[in-house]
Image (tube, rainbow, N blue to C red; front, side):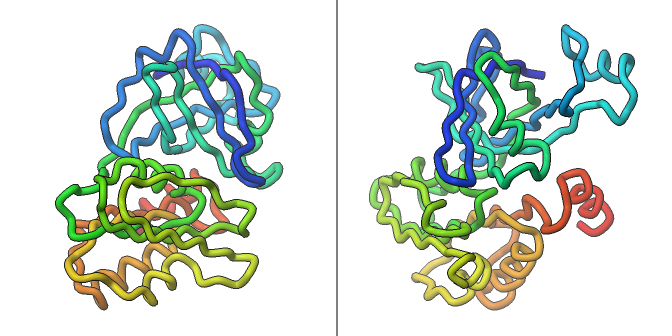
Length: 256
């Protein structure tokens, strides 16, 4: 369990809040080198006071189950050992859920508790070209991957967001073809956009994460129509429409 403190928050788009954390707990976090490195955030329930020093065991002994914190999975957007800052970007759509509202209301000094990091993907520098696809939930990992691309690497990135106001400035040393897909304008989802893409020669290094139904559609297309090896791709559903993370994880255990 790591405990950092919130240093500041930034509204980087209408639907995304960046929480920047640091403090004495920063040195206990070790970057594992993956561009999709993620942590399991321990999110407090509104209005509940938790015992200090905080441990899951102390919470479970002191409070009824309905007051226990919830766990939410988020990608680390940046680990900066010089500034001693950890960035995490949260999709925020009003009062829905736990993590987005928490990020929108976070203040300097608030604790940020988490376990991790995990992760498994970084761009393969020897790949003929790179294909990145996803929605807002994958945007931090996609941004990390773009920043890690070798100079001159051929990269196609398709990112699905609500509208142009949700686009972010992304940097990449490679030869980047970045395509924003706007739901509000009726653009195809990232899965359909990949299906309509003209592929370059050679098997791409694929990173595709996002809504589960779209990921299943995309995985079937890449494996069946494009002949790519699923084991060689980083492709995973982060969430499912209509489900919170607890319900989504339970459903995945029943139907992986």
